[in-house]
Amino acid sequence: MRKLTVALGERYYPIIIAANQLQQCGELTAEVIANRKVLLVSNPRVFGLYGEKTAASLQQAGFQVEVGIVPEGETYKNMAQANRLLDMAMQQQLERDSSIIALGGGVIGDLAGFAAAIYQRGVNFVQLPTTLLAQVDSSVGGKVAVNHPSGKNMIGAFHQPRLVVIDPDTLSTLEDREYRSGLGEVVKYGIVCDEHLFDYLETNAELLSQGESACVTEVIYRCCKIKAAIVEKDETETGLRAVLNLGHTFGHAIEKLGDYGTYRHGEAIAMGTMAAAYLALDYDFITEQQLQRMEKLYKSLNVDCRMPAFAPEDIYNNMLNDKKMQQNRLRLILPAKWGEYVMLEDPEKGRVLQAISSAQGN
Ligand SMILES: NC(=O)c1ccc[n+]([C@@H]2O[C@H](COP(=O)([O-])OP(=O)(O)OC[C@H]3O[C@@H](n4cnc5c(N)ncnc54)[C@H](O)[C@@H]3O)[C@@H](O)[C@H]2O)c1
Ligand SMILES: [Zn+2]
Image (cartoon, rainbow, N blue to C red; front, side, top):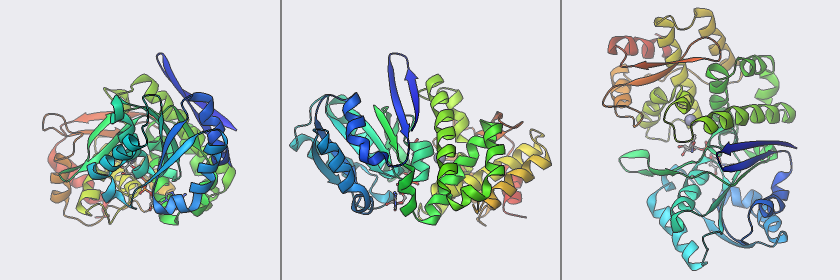
């Protein structure tokens, strides 16, 4: 079993990473939370696969479990579903020190976490992430949110979990496309946070691409370690944490242009990261050889990183609407030397358009 800790002043929480841990989630939760009432939140697909096992483990540890099922899909990461969960919490008479537990991918984690953040001004929250993307990124760090018709993640909070239990075995049932989407976020860490991770990904690309269990577990551990260290230094994203937004301003524009259905989040991030790399090359922050290594890694992991053929102007305009913007000026995280980044404020429009075009293969 591998264990990490996220330390935030007086508060801290464990991240447990190991095969078969879903079966132990009751015991692990009981170690950090005394109140025995929990609302377990999931969707039909994930609950069908892992719900029984999870609920049984919680019950064995003495928890009184109610289940809240949210329909499948990003469209249900909304206020109406958050309200439903709050109604259930009221009915179940969850108390200030009771818990809401998320079993699922980033959608369920963000939604359940948001309900946990606002119910009685915040109750305990436990993350049981079941997608690679959630295991390497969204389950750690306490960003929780729902979407608003006018924008993704527009209504949210920072609400750290009390515990994260990562069982890589759950990835065996994940659709291949979802797995590759998670790999899109993994590569991000290697590029701007940790050169050794990038080397590791290159060396082990084949194993990782096949989902070989020891390799995947190692990668999850390394990504969580990086994210934990960043969150410890900058919990509410006032500075350093922005590094994790590599490729995200470009990527969010792609997700939006695809109506949040055509491209998975991690896919859009891989594409956005290559656009950021072309811009970084133009500004001489990276070398041609670096850019090629990035592209090659995505390819060997079977992650499509070519920007789709939307008009570069349309992509640019959507970037301007991203909520990561500051005072109407674009602010982009670009790769620099391996494991380092540059924050570029207000880049020239023509150069951004050119980078998009290059990332489209033109
Ligand atoms: N809070 C954060 O810091 C943060 C970071 C990145 C992304 N996000 C959010 O995460 C969401 C995307 O998360 P995601 O990529 O995990 O998508 P997701 O939650 O939609 O899950 C993807 C699909 O996989 C299914 N699934 C989940 N686990 C499974 C399993 N083990 N076996 C079979 N199927 C399974 C789900 O039912 C769904 O159909 C977005 O809403 C994004 O905004 C949040
Ligand atoms: Zn992301």
